Image (tube, rainbow, N blue to C red; front, side):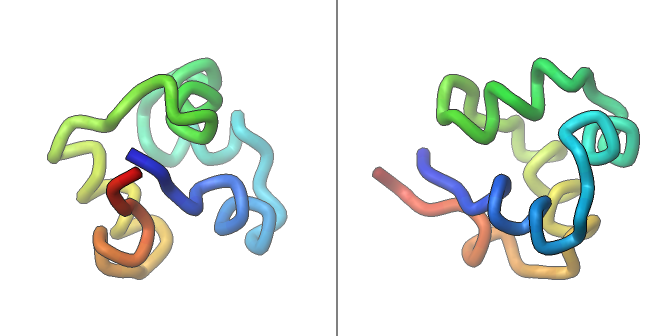
Length: 63
């Protein structure tokens, strides 16, 4: 699953650690999400959408 996390995070001026703290995950998890090595659980996807104030569908999309 592809995503726009890196772009969205950059627009906010947040580091991976900043986003990780807001989501309650490790920085390594944010890195894995951004590089497509890890697909988030549904609860985590909802958290991410909430943090960025966007629908899940605008952040995540199929390959």
